[in-house]
Image (tube, rainbow, N blue to C red; front, top):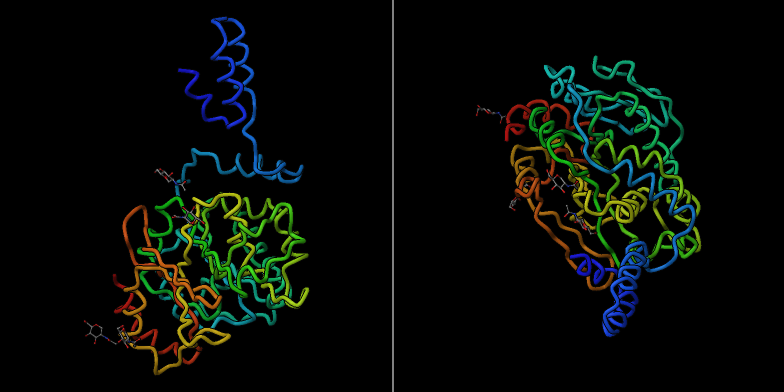
Length: 360
Ligand SMILES: *[C@@H]1O[C@H](CO)[C@@H](O)[C@H](O)[C@H]1NC(C)=O
Ligand SMILES: *[C@@H]1O[C@H](CO)[C@@H](O)[C@H](O)[C@H]1NC(C)=O
Ligand SMILES: *[C@@H]1O[C@H](CO)[C@@H](O)[C@H](O)[C@H]1NC(C)=O
Ligand SMILES: *[C@@H]1O[C@H](CO)[C@@H](O)[C@H](O)[C@H]1NC(C)=O
C-alpha cells in the first residue's frame, strides 16, 4: 500500500527506491528509506521566496474548507464612481422589498454624490482620487472590500460602476451569487501586445509570465477571496511598482491584470474566468460601446441576457477566439447579471422596461 504512494513523489525518489528493490531482501533498511521518502517535500519548479511561502500559508489557511454561510447572508454592492450615480432610481426599484439581504457601499473619487435613493444615503465610504490604469484603482477596490468585510453577513462582493445596470430581479441575482462557491473574476491568457506585452520581468520571481493574465475589473467575489485580496501585499506591490501606464514603453493597466493574475497563482480553480458584468467591445475601439436612449430596447436587454458562452479574443495577429460555456455549478446558465455602459439618458427607458426584462 505505502509503496504506491512513493511513486508519486518524483523521478529522483523513484531511482532511490528501485535501487533498493534490486538489493537482497533486507526488511529494516527498506523501511527507513520509505520513511525518509515520506518526509521529502515535493520538488517545486523553482525555490520559493520567503515572502511567497508566507503568502502561501496564509492563503491556504483562509481558503481551506469547511466554510459555512451565516444565518442572514448578504450581497455587498460596491459602487466605484467619480460622483453621483445616474441609476440610483433603478437600483432603488431593484432593492425594494429585499431589505436585510444586501448592503451598499459607494466610493466616489471626484465629487460628493447627491443621493436620491434611501438605500444609498449615508453609504459613502472614505475615498481617494483614482488615476486610470494605476494602482489607485486597485486601492479603491480594496477600500470598498475592507469596508464591506466589516459586516460579517456580507458573503459576495460585487464591484459595479456608475454606468452599470442590473439585468435581473434581486432574487435571481442573489441566488446566482450566493449559491455557488466560486468567484466571478474575468481571466484569460492573451499572448498579444495588450496582454503579455504589458508584462515586466521586474515582477520576477513571484510573478512569471506563464501566470500573467488579463480580464475586466468588474468582479463578484466570495468572502474568502475578498479576505485574501486584503491579505495580499506580495503580488499587490509587484503590480503597484511594475504595472502602470508608460513604464518601459508599456501600457500596463493594473486593474486589468492584478486580480486575474493573483487568482491564477493562488486559486485558479476558484474563479469562473468570466465577469458577470456584460460590456460590448464589438466596435473594437479603445472604449466599449456606450448605450444611448434609443439603443435601450427590450430586444437589446433580452439579447444580453440570452448569452451563455463567454468569449475572449487575443490581441495578437492571430486574434484567437477563446470561448467557454458559462457553467454555474456545472449547469450552463446566462453569463451576465449586470451590464454597462449605459449613458444617464437611458434611465427612463430602463425604468419603464425593468419589470419586463428582469424576469428570467
Ligand atoms: C465547490 O463545492 C463543491 C462541492 O459542493 C466541490 O466539489 C468543489 O470543489 C468546490 N469548488 C471550489 C472551487 O471550492
Ligand atoms: C479557470 O481557468 C483556470 C486556468 O487558468 C482553470 O484552472 C480553472 O479550472 C477555470 N475555472 C473554471 C471554473 O473552469
Ligand atoms: C439581437 O440579436 C440579434 C441576433 O444576434 C441581432 O440580429 C439583433 O440586431 C440584436 N438586437 C439588438 C437590439 O442588439
Ligand atoms: C411589459 O409586459 C407587459 C405584459 O407582457 C406588456 O403589456 C407591456 O407592454 C410591456 N412593456 C414594455 C415597455 O415593453
